[in-house]
Length: 112
Length: 116
Image 1: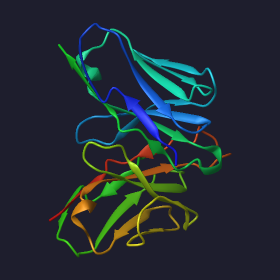
Image 2: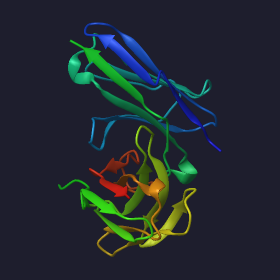
Image 3: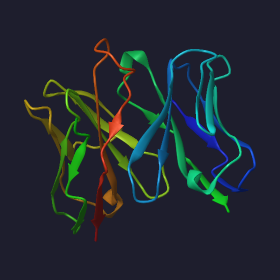
């Protein structure tokens, strides 16, 4: 069964610092997603990565995908308090694309 | 364009009862998936509906069942509720492959179920 592991699970950082969240998965996949979830809220789509070497950036967040290493990263640049949330990666397959396998999430707390 | 909506927002039930949760998909989306998210965990896939038929199921017992209607809205039914069923239930809609987009799933706000 596919396993998706994120680390760290908890991350506390100061505003202005940089950090990276890692998402490893156990089986070759051809699509990877990053979502954000605020407390008590639903999931907000951040990035969709569909090919090896894909890199996408939005504001202070940048996501990349290495399908050979089965690894995706979410890099945070010059963190601000508003980025505090839980971040999930999810993996899916073309043959079963609507079944998403989620990681456990990384809870990010950015201190002012 | 309206997003994914779910009802009710919160629900309290007792063990052994039955519950029905509802979801309206985003305009134009004909595929609906349901997820269970326990506290502090990532969402787990329950099942997916496409053209009113179940099109994939996760590791959940048969007491979890669903329906999809011609307007693409969907229901999740859970019979014989257990304490461990307490969770946030998320509905997500999407387009099937080949109909544009990147098969991203768009999530509703969820229904928080508490089983006592």
